[in-house]
Amino acid sequence: MERLIVFSIIAFVASAVCGLIFIPQILYFCKRNRLYDLPNERKVHHNAVPRLGGVAFVPSMLLAFMMVLMMISFQTDHRISFSLWSVYFFIGLAMVYIVGFIDDLVGVAPVTKFIVQICAACVIPLSGLSFNNLYGLFGIYEIPLYLGWAVTVFVVVFIVNAMNLIDGIDGLSGGLSLLALSGFLYSFALQGLWYYVIFITGLMGVLVAFLYFNIFGNPKKNQKIFMGDAGSLSLGFILAFLCVKFAMDNQAVMPYRRDGLLLSYTLLIVPAFDVIRVSLYRLRHHCPLFLADKNHIHHKLMRAGLSQRQTLIVILTLSMSFFLINRMLASIFEITWIVLVDIAIWVLFHLALNYRISRVVDGRHALDTKVAA
Image (cartoon, rainbow, N blue to C red; front, side, top):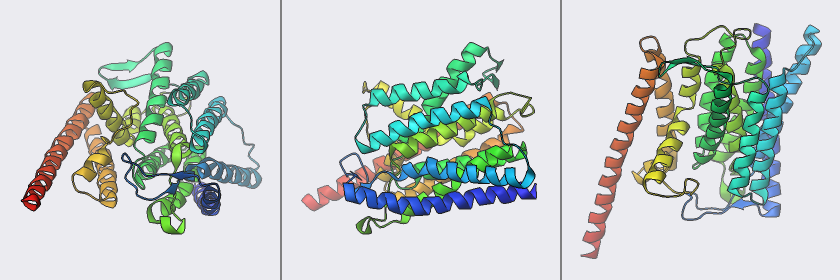
């Protein structure tokens, strides 16, 4: 056990070091080739910022993961083998990573990206990994294979897009991913699945390195960077894979867990609820679903008068609050009631936020009227 904890720490440190080496090189490459995310009326940043930070995620994670696996193999004479779903997972990850990288470089049509996401999502159930139990959600427990496959593809594509769409201010997508990865890290460690723990710590290391440049980097000194689609799509796919993996009822791998689905859902609740709310808003106002707008949770908090840093803190606090609330409720209520409580909290939060925004707007209008007079 202690040795495996050490290996996990090594994976984290190795990945962070890779990130600290790769990201400055990416910054230089972006500057030399003028690859910037330019400000416009929809975006909150005011300077041209490089957008290829996420390119470092997958290579850093894989280098750290493979290095630790080789260390384990040499020290324990244990032969490392990969399951079928691990191979399929890396194929799917490569698909979304490559299309995200190309999009960051030259641009890719939204329809093309969506098709690639569906193809990558289909790879996971083809390997035999899929939702097969809803643990009592709306009274449903075991589900047939064909339905589990359909639900899996939908959930993977949904999470990939949710992480992509919430990537709107410094540290938000990376911060939410880090929180979710921490939850999965703890959960897989409890089940003794140490290869997954090492894999997760390998991703967390490069995320920490990226967040340093993303949040604290000075754009005027070419030290600030965004993750871009290569980063957000890859993070979304990895989190979706971990979600399905932990929620699947496969007692040959993990014992039955009453909260298997609840935990996976809770760790991704903020980006998931946000994309659902925005989609419903667009449908209600007859707007195209893929139309970019400024109606996400971070946009609303900033309209309420918060700074980027304050907005980040509020959303991360909200995510952690959902986790704590759901953990407490898990011992009392079934998952259906917990989901309904979460929805109620989310609706009340946005009603309060809408009220705050209206007060801010009225205050600005009164000030403009006074100045004009």
